Length: 181
Figure (tube, rainbow, N blue to C red):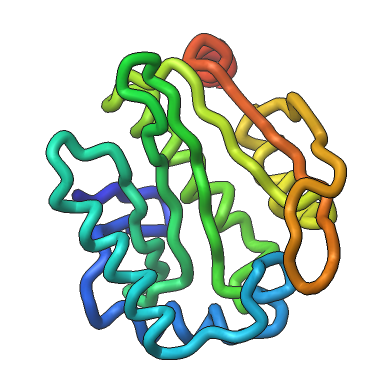
């Protein structure tokens, strides 16, 4: 599976992608909003292996694709169906910090939302982010997701409690917004 955008190619993960993922997941800027304090080769190989394993699910419910720019892996983005009956999914993304601030996360996530609503017939997509991760919240808002709830002290990692935000958008809201765009 591949999805092309104006600047990116979203494609299935392959085993050798672990090196590029390890490079950015080892960056302190990346690690700031994650539970990990460091990432080993074994951690990242398992992480990429999980995405590869999802490619063989029947029916497939998780689509996490490598985001590439000029043939270099710079992150990943995906939709993961939470409930086949209700057609609900969550979206998630991460990006190499060297590429932050250029709209790549928004571009990749917009393509995955379109795939989810058009091809998977999703009814609703949600996303969660750490409240202090303002850049991630801005990506979700640019996509048209609305903050539904803030959960104080919801996640424990790095020896502290973190507030989280849950965002959502329905197929109807997404269709209305993209009909006028």
